[in-house]
Image (tube, helix red, strand yellow):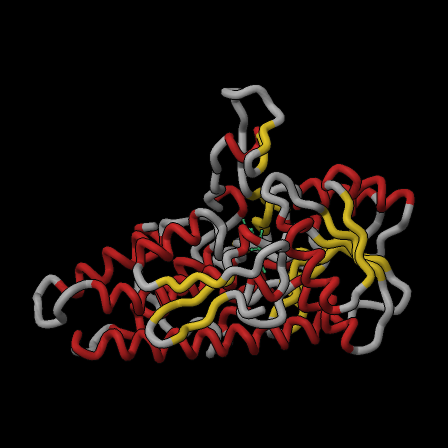
Length: 356
Ligand code: MRU
């Protein structure tokens, strides 16, 4: 399953809200369509959102009218920023927009659409390569007969390749290791139950589904050899935002001496964010807690707090697995060094993230 592909001038995505029962491909031809798909989680997962930002900026270049018009650059930027605002926590979305806008600077506007496509294709390929590298580095941490726990969905559907946290497990399986994976269902939108189980089952990995609230007891009663999660934004001190429930999982892992590892590409590190307090946390509609699909279990109108992400403090994280290998504590130095490598961040357009 390819979560997103660029086909004949449009972005084709698998509608993840229909999984696991229906595999429906949507063809998105406008920034508004893509924005809707992102806001409703038809397309989701930080690295996939980065590519959506990149390809969406190509759509913006095509949609912004005549490149001969003096307002064309401003229109492109306006549409691209509108897209970057579709979801606030995953820094990759703004990063993808930023990379493409940066590649256009200094170019004659008549060439922007073509150049945006070239840059987006390059980022797409780089994301696949990053997935392979992270998975290889993380799989070295697995052992035969182990039991691992994961949260939300950090697999192929959340990226353009093998995934991040799930990529590690898929790579371990490919190497012939036999292990079991416990999957948190991941309230309220059930990305673990609907998507992660599907990807692991399709790979032939032994999987058992648990509710989020069972994770601590699973560590105590069944034993867990490691937790692997993805990330939506990593601050410069290593604090990591990921799907709501990650923080509690990290506390439980600490209490039980279970290594807690984050697997993410360097594009998920926010070079402007000093620590977790500066990470914007998306709050979603209360309705997502009151029921699911046509079913409602809480009284209509019940007030609810629905943050979509939380922040795991760096001190609860054993390693951050990236395409450059493992970053370990103390994270500030390790992260700074990783970001200093060339080829990580191509170019930066100052202000895109600020404006988002
Ligand atoms: O709300 P979602 O489904 O976009 O949240 C996704 C996650 O929290 C993932 O774990 C994260 O993006 C890492 S994806 C490789």
